[in-house]
Image (cartoon, rainbow, N blue to C red):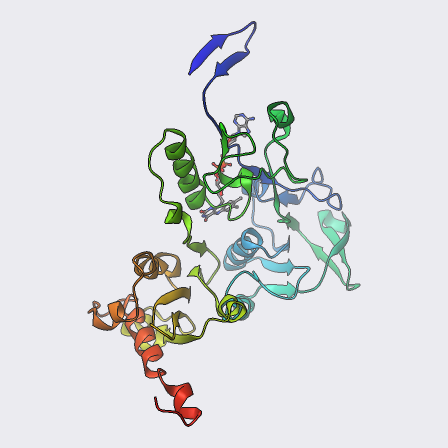
Length: 350
Ligand SMILES: Cc1cc2nc3c(=O)[nH]c(=O)nc-3n(C[C@H](O)[C@H](O)[C@H](O)COP(=O)(O)OP(=O)(O)OC[C@H]3O[C@@H](n4cnc5c(N)ncnc54)[C@H](O)[C@@H]3O)c2cc1C
């Protein structure tokens, strides 16, 4: 890389390859007066100098759901407003439903299929939200979590021959090259999944490719997701919905926290692990978990999936007791107990 000091403070860098990793910022819908005291986004909410007694969170995406859980646990009355009628629809639908019920149980008040039409000052320093349902909410603070936009405004991308979407997303190929082969992009600036974990891995793949190092194109096929709601969610691979869409015949195995000693010791009454196996060869295709430490425990399943393992790996393994890892054994045995059930039901040999 060549560096040329120019006039004033400007520095000009020349390089064979460039990696754009400028991240993203909260998107600000026009409905909300962000200059008004009490109106926050996911960055500025960290500047709160006291706990609001009541908080409206606009948008039940990952960030909105996590903050809604956190503020509820801290004692605020939280309204979570969401345009859809499903929580985090990319999740396995059973996990999504379980999470919504669990969050309601902790005290989060959902306002499904609702949009905020107006936001105004109310008496006593409070804020009033008018919802598309006709409801009005008066709260101490509002957290707008309505998505993010890429940080590309100052990059003058078009001068380099790169076009970005409305929200600044840069398109890349599977080596994270933009339209200009010597310019790579990784992380939030390219959009989904927009996680710290995946951003780092994307950048590593991009730079390995740039320097001519061998890159396994499969190394990015399996990405775990951790959602730090209360309870937390860990997930990787296919969901029941995606398997049905692909026409894959599968078996579900469940292990409930209450059915293993560690789950009972820690008092997690509702958590469970759900494993999805391909019926034909019992290959593990999906891992979905809700409950204590789910974001960590999903990695056990991830390693099994990365090594193309089948149910046998959990059937044969001995897990420490009491641990939550034992749930993998319970869920696998549950799935194996269902092998042949459909055939028997149809009157065919198991
Ligand atoms: C509330 C919240 C919670 C999150 N929780 C999780 C989580 O639990 N787990 C997880 O994996 N991910 C989480 N994420 C997502 C994670 O923070 C991002 O995916 C990750 O930080 C993206 O990394 P990045 O390197 O692409 O961008 P960033 O981390 O945003 O870094 C981009 C950097 O580029 C700088 N920059 C921008 N423009 C320029 C420019 N023109 N010139 C020079 N520098 C520039 C910025 O100042 C910034 O330092 C969360 C995000 C939010 C908002």
